[in-house]
Image (cartoon, rainbow, N blue to C red):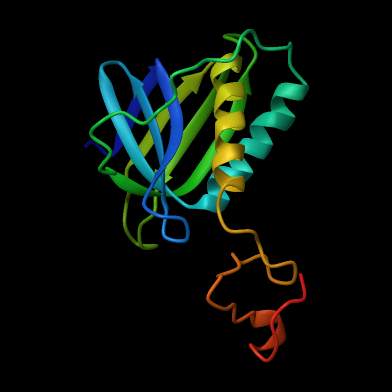
Length: 165
């Protein structure tokens, strides 16, 4: 993979998970210019991205019909782990622009992927991402970390007592 990849307009933009609840791996997958790119992301990154896309779409013209068939496609092995995601809107082309940067050590250069999506793709992604995030373990009301059914050592209580919710 080159250090910088511009996929342009995507024909696939989705999110999915692999693994059992509590150990799921979140994958962001996009395909454009004949290239399929699968990136490993954190659950929190997907949650924030879905929320941000929802707020962005609320300020734009209503998207058309939501896309279907947003399952991950093979191969699902991630190319790299996302460190940061940038989002902007290009009014001239009516596209949402996303830039994903690889998670690397401070003194290293990582890969960067840039791609554009339609309002319809953003809306479908936001709905799917929200459903996937909510399907996991509920967050602790004190620290926000996932509650583990086998016991939760909440850092906000120094592990002395479990949360009451």
